[in-house]
Length: 558
Length: 81
Image 1 (tube, rainbow over the protein chains, first blue to last red):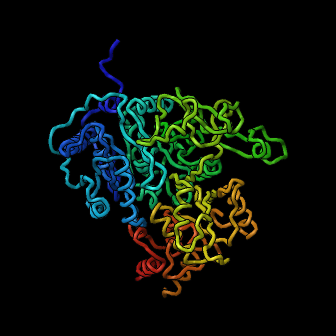
Image 2 (cartoon, each protein chain N blue to C red):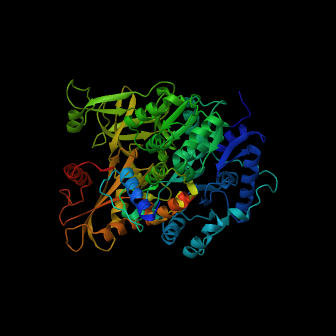
Image 3 (cartoon, rainbow over the protein chains, first blue to last red):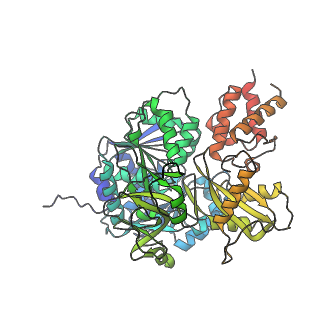
């Protein structure tokens, strides 16, 4: 039987739910909430599609979108899909970043990826032109969004690249995750099903769209299923986190995705006397950085008077390389906790039941694999491990990406068709527990940073001994995220702390990575190397923590 | 409230926010000088300052601050009769 509806591309789904007068998104900015209907979304996207074509762009051409929080974000992205082009969001330079450095490294990315066009705002024009005079630009202010007829969705090969997600790494070295329409559809359909996504749902979000959680869960998913979206400015949310609750109440939202630190930020910042009704929320989903059981418990205790219940707090393990969700806890019931014997876990990487009276560790589960996605836990020799044995998480399936954009070395990330995530975990009764990381990625405030990048930048600071730097994470209970610790030895061999050196390392880190760090200057030969001569982040982390404990009352993150 | 008293009160707010009883800040202190002073702790600091001085600081005002001296000047303006 034919339905007359081909369910093969993102646009097939989006246009199936299309009704010009229906609200797709409520855009929240500077105290105003502006509704955007599907009709307006289409008109704006069509204006962009025409602009791309008039610039000579062809299907498959890459378009970078670097915009602040405005409806243009949605128009520019969807316009690229309508034109058959490949859009990719990038974060714009923050006020703390050096614009010269930002645009210089961006130029490297544009050239490496052979980007045909950059959509941005006039405030960034001079910086971008200064670094990359030859790059073709489209300024959002130059477009009349309501002009002209709607551009119909094109006939697109489902296996054509839909968009790229750029995640970890300094701007110039960012890797683009290649996602086809088919992969996105496979993910969205399966994920929507396990969420029970329906017409009564509304998603409230402050997440930036250059992040996979914001892009997929809080833009692509609602777009494909006609679910209303309430979208805040990420920077405004940081200052007014309670706005999330206010908007959830006002618009009867049902779903929100948040990294662990955001749960903590809400606990810190929401006025204890504030009264919101959060009883209609179906789920607050913790995702994109390790979910901490104590953070969830704190959130529950703090906001149960506002209607928050244990079964609303859920966990998702996701990554751009799988489009988004790898596992999700079942909605409607409290997240399970796995308690294991600490000794066995640390000594033999086995998640055994706790021994009465002995120390134990508690992990929240991240749920069952998304249907159709195969998940294995692999040992050092990449052999599958049974339940409750800790190893590297590897995934395969129709929504797992084929490799990074224009990166011939992507093959090393796969074994036997399975993508090696670099995360460590174990299975317990079919549910995944993520317990650590194998690759040297630090997740701070929901963003991924390579320890190697941090060490390279620090090592290039005058006064730091080249090659004698280690960067590693330490969980900060106060902020609910990982602090980045940078330990560096002085080039002059002196032993004391150097306030100017500390300041310079912090300044460079903010300029180049938009990353606040904690810096410790140490005497010569303080840092430990592995037997193979590499800097040992694990040993240096342990040494740092031991010294902090000896130094007295802990400071945040220390 | 005179500028010195404001700075003394701000120092307390910094110590409580960053859980560091020995932290010393001056008008020239910036986020590059204080361990852990990121966008989230900045907002927590502003909340602490609001409560301590019984004033309101808007998101726009908070995002424009470049150093402790800017914050002290903002507090002084808010406390003006």
